Image 1 (tube, rainbow, N blue to C red):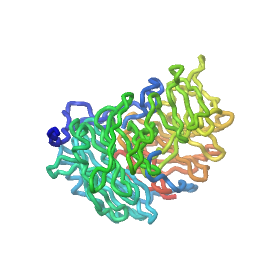
Image 2: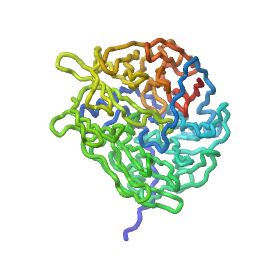
Image 3: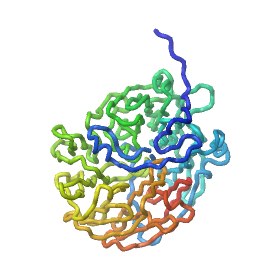
Image 4: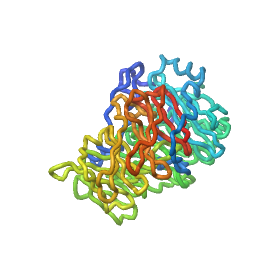
Length: 527
């Protein structure tokens, strides 16, 4: 038996190196970023690229808990119920910790993990400082009062490390937060909290022997999600390689190594669904749409893994993959009964379903593709439930119009609503004729989303399907506007003074809308 290599602390990178996507190196200004959602995947066809680099975000298909209730209708002028900030959540001690390594070197982040059945909202925050981040999560009552505070934690966030590693995850009535405690052990731990009180119920160490390769490389932090007993962990080793394991207080229950040589970037995202642990390539806002490795949560038995050429997972577990016969792509349903060729065009916008717990994206319901017919650009809407009957939009839309691109949604009567630059356009779902046009905010090149990605303008449909809610047109003040799905008439506009008008994001918590921005604020919007 060979001698065991002693544990090595993750080594902070040389500050002269480039920072992780979306995050500046210490004391460096945030870079300008271009937005291409799935364009790299469409262009490369066999490369596993899923959109913008980042996360949230990102609140998604592999979440342990999906949004159970529909979004409230918001028929009249809403109000801001309450606002909470990173400073409120971290407190003076947390802010002091965030300044120990030279002061904040990234935008403060605040995020929601949804609403519990007792009405409590789970809201977390973290602040990067040099190569470290200080974080915490709190419980907030419907009146905006903090009713409990979880313990503050710190995690390494240097070169190559994914910002989402600084965010806590939820499931099974528990909260999991990754930390790198200053106890001399030089090992990561997972703090497990009770979601109703925020009290720590156990601490699970991430052992060196199982994750030696990841610790020795030291470029990534682990991500974890709570199980009924223990946690599921993915610890990236390098680009396309990682170790997945189930851990509990007694130790390692099982572990497995995964590798994908066609993956771009070295980060992964981990979710739990229906007794299965799903690990997908992490590439920011669209990360949960990647084709995952799937393991039985109890035994660790491999259920499935990505196949070379598969790029995006559809809502029905079908896939978008590179065609065997050409350089184009094809959409294949889960039963294999429908295979639709799709040219590797240069513009794409996703039609998404939403999740309140792990960010806005849960699955790809469809998409708009802009391609050329030889004479002009043509925009086509694909619905994954009816993939063989796409709708061609009777409009002039170029690939550059979908750059930057935002979500596509459907309202009452199923019109297709697309955000194109500073416009919201509604189209008849059968004829493709444009029905109406409304104005919204153009995405700023400097906009940075709450997950560290470039600013993503998600559109939201109220549960009655009669209103689409979007960022308000630029007036110098942040705000959101509701348009009538039937005719595009403006229903109301809510101004949000104090929020960054160029860099805020609409999300949800339970049945409520939220707004977050790059100054580290979250507002709950009450109908």
